Length: 312
Ligand code: NAD
Ligand code: UD2
Image (cartoon, rainbow, N blue to C red):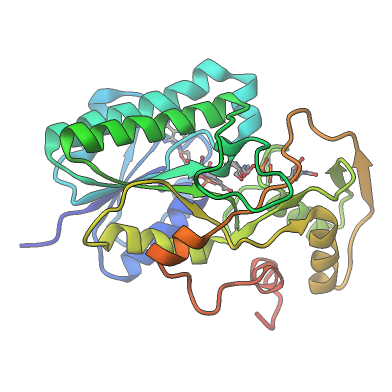
């Protein structure tokens, strides 16, 4: 009998499609549920037998259909932009919380247990500023995005206790790499900076550029997601996913300039309201439970790969 598919919600997006590529390459049947709001059909491998259900996680019936007959789920479908959630809290909530709840219910009904969930470092707000943030750091969701991620974690835990779901909850820090869409001003900063640097267009830094982020290459994240799908047991509690390495935006710009051999003019504007100043993961729990690739992709190697510059 052929293996049942793994469902990847949001599989046509940046992280999802990078995951789908590796699942397919390793011979797993894959089903994708995606409403193509930011994801693209063209992100999915051609002729690889990936089944795409074009639909919304906010629609319970569609989610039921997608979960039916699956072996496990990786739940990535969400509005990924923090700012979009500030602009449209209600619309975002449908995708980011109702979608998770629909998934929990559909999994319970279908008897599918394992779900890997993409939560976010945003749940910590500005707590832990200046030091690395461990999972017990108090939560301070500052935006609808962060509130929905934290609430999703609580619902998943309820379904674990009550209905035997096996959630593996990851709090991603800042992920970057190929297919991160640079087209919106609220896209991931590395996708915007590298795209503009390649085109010779001016770059805008919001603030003084000394804010820091913990950047992780998407290929390294995918290796962790795969382990979470296969892990024989599931331990309780969310797991930070980051390198525990802080890079300021000014350092990032220097690195892009070094890799490309050029950098366009950089303008500094007022910091975005509500922007987190420093964010760095304490990743001890990640390293206890999972393996990061050896060696992990450092920022210069990741940028060189993304920019298609040799030496990567
Ligand atoms: P992305 O926008 O590229 O991917 C999200 C995908 O979900 C897209 O394909 C989109 O079309 C789909 N989608 C959105 N709403 C949907 C809905 N209602 N129904 C069905 N599909 C829907 O973003 P990404 O960076 O790949 O993010 C993937 C997940 O990881 C998200 O849950 C995001 O919140 C989380 N995350 C990302 C980062 C990061 O740094 N990129 C950090 C923390 C958490
Ligand atoms: C990212 C994720 C979010 C989340 C969080 C977890 C995206 C789009 N957002 O939010 O989903 O879970 O990480 O850590 O993937 N900036 C500029 N110029 C630009 C664009 C951004 O200066 O043109 C600044 C921005 O003000 C911020 C920093 O770059 O200080 C990082 O911004 P971001 O949107 O890449 O990431 P973040 O941390 O807000």
